[in-house]
Length: 292
Image (tube, rainbow, N blue to C red; front, side, top):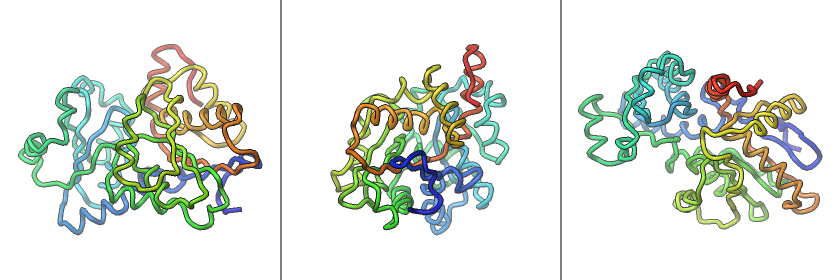
């Protein structure tokens, strides 16, 4: 058995990627690895990226910029967040790392990849290296290809949460022919298939789209209870946006007999635990049970 995996039972194991860094956690460390090298090689001194109120990517880029001597700029979806930013754990952390935040309307945010929008940003912030929302690009996929290696060939299924598709693309590219890669999207809809196919050529993958709980920032009492019970039983903390939904999905699929008999399953814990604090603020305001 591969070292450093967490055994849930004889058939399900966890790769604890959330332990690979205190602040640039899980898949974010993988996605940023080659992008930071490219930014340095191109002579850029500023990183500019995009995200929402509780974005793991925003927090990771802010810290990565701080320790790698980059200025950082975060384009944040939602003008109304400006007044709330100091009480937002993710955004306040990003600011404490020196990230400059620019809050834009949701309408403007939809045009963030257009040249006119980026030129406006260059007029305001100078030249910069662009990191896409969620960090997914070809270099990010290259980094995520390093998650799996020959030692993991004993597993029949590799599972991971899906946000923008970069992590699962890397897993698909580095997977063995006998392995099935299952992605658990945090968003509703089937649009991610098109994004993933930009980076992969294999067909040994599938998206399990029934476990989004309504979308990124959506959660239920049932999911909170599952996350808390999972941590208590297995000593593995889960976040409410990505890994909590994935493990809920895995356990549900197992109960339905989805996996082949005696198959070995490896679940990639991609981090994102910084998002718990922000979600608990929302839950507390609603007098709902908290994630512990």
